[in-house]
Length: 181
Image (cartoon, rainbow, N blue to C red):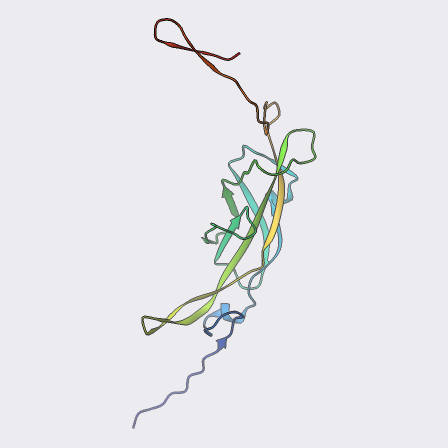
């Protein structure tokens, strides 16, 4: 006669998920992550447009994040999930197409959107007719932050579009001369 063992499995149903999540580990007993605050560079009013990176100052409650994504677009099109290691900083943040900031020097608004997600256990997926346990995660809310990016003092033409006419002249010996009228 085979010995039977009793095993209790907790199941967490996530809204929108067709497959239940098998809760495992401590993350399964915590609420999903929630971003309660988000600013760029600790809430500074402005930043130099030439800064290589900016910091994403934020507060998260609930399950600890395992990944994050940041985008200039609210729909996160093209944004990929990145392993979460605090403090968060990003490069390639500047976007000169933003609206002008109300300031005495030339500047543009840069808006970034932040979202995190946390692993909360494992879920059962059917792959090629086989049941597999794969990591399950839940995503947080999305918050946005805006900062004014400005040119260093004395930078001519920042944010301006200037048409420059150039003429190529023949010097009579088959070489061209560049002339800016």
